[in-house]
Amino acid sequence: MKQAIAYLRKSTDMQETSLEQQRKDILVFTDANGINVIRFFEEEACGENVEGRPQFQAMVEFCKTSREPFQYVLVPDISRWGRFQDPTETFYWIHEVKKGHKEVIFVNEGFKEDNIGTSLMKLIKSSEASEYLKKIRQNTIRGMRYHAGKGYWMGGKAPYGYDRIIAETGQVLKDGEHKNIKDQKIKLVVNKKEVKLIKLIYILYGEKGLSDNSIVNYLNGRGAPAPNGNKWSKSTIWSILHNQVYIGNTIYNVRNYHRRNGKGSFNPRKDWIVTGNTHQAIIARELWDKVQARTHQAFLGGRFLAKKDKPRSPYLLSSIMYCEVCKSKWQGRRYHLKGGVRRIYICGGYHSYGSQSCISWQIDADNIEGRVVNYIVGKLDNRQWRENIENEVKEKLSIMQDKSDDELKELDLQIKDTSLKIRHWEEAIEKGLNIERAVGNINKLEHKRDALLDERSRITKTLAEKADIKKAVQKIMKYLDNFKEVLTYGNMEEKKQFIRQFVKEITVNPRERTAKIMVYKNATYDIIIGAKRCHELIELRYP
Image 1 (cartoon, rainbow, N blue to C red):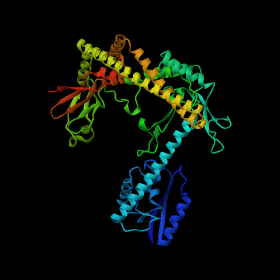
Image 2: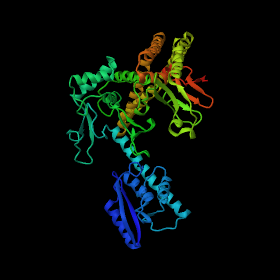
Image 3: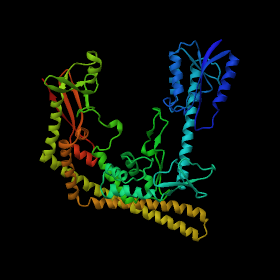
Image 4: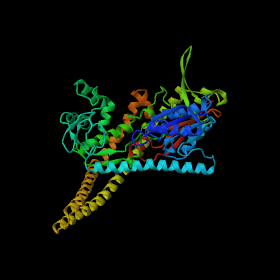
């Protein structure tokens, strides 16, 4: 009797054939074909990625490494194998199984000759499964837009500062509680106790100028209740300061937890579903804008970095030095000598794999770091360089003002046109038009006009802030002086982030004993203004 293993899968969030029924279908097939199943791999998981399916991974590994004498992998149908975004990935995993000399059989199709026609049919069915998944997503997003537009909350736990209530009854839902009837809708209402802390956090950061760390100490020192029931943390403060829910907006589709890497990742901003005025705002738009402007400046200064971008090495140039020969990164190393400790940079390829990978050569860390630091200090102290930045900033601010004036004129035209359309609908009601239809259109137009007015207010405020160009330029030049303070008094992490504002990368050629430093031509100006970065090259030669 031939031997086989079986793989069964059910998505956790879809109405599909149960694992028990899939097992029965497999056994009916094996009884009819004289096959014995020696092991079942089964799981409840989304079929879009492999990393989120441990049983699938275990099954593939079992096929490639097991000494058990089996010939087949039985799967109920091709959609149980996976609904991959790229249908060709179906064949990739079938091929991985074939490396272990095993054949994948989709039970609903039976045994078929493995030829081009069969492969094409598998590709078509895999594409259908992929399209089915896309259709589900589109319907879900469409539903989110509709319900958010009605002011309903589609998320889980209410954000700190709000409670969830059942719209039809007004019943407040505690954390972990769910509505009893499927068709009931959920809305957000302000939590009278928590709202005070939300406002306080925004005032302390946006008005009083406290840092996130100071706010954490302030709240914990007074025993203020935190969202998670524990203590306040910088990440919690940071999350609150960037959550648009506090200005009355609802955002969906920000993250995707079913990508191929198996981890949650951010979707492109263009795919976010942002709906305004879905619930009562806690924070005024003016204060929100002030907070966002300050946090943006913090990002530019390198204070807040994604975990993967945080430098960990105690070497100033780590992660920006590359080898021209083997393309590996250069690494910092310490050697204890009789006279003390010597710090060097060495090719990571040579260090890990020896002379078969690259050439043995070391660069004294103090030497190259000193050259880079001296270059930056020279720039900051160069009067002509600072004057160039000052002139370019003035020019840029002037252009931005002209552009804002044009935007205001265009907004005024749109506001006037929208107001005229509203008036036409109101006149239509007076003449006897169906009121429900007219009111719906008027509401949409009023929302549009409100958004246009908000944008006009934002631009007007920005123009007022930048009206005094001389004052703005002085502020930016002071920003340069703060950079020098970081280089002199900052800790290792701050110094490294500072250097990365000036140095793009360093390429080392151990054959020629050279190091080429690619620096930003207008480093700090580019950061402040957001201009396209230009480069210039500094070449160091070693004996």
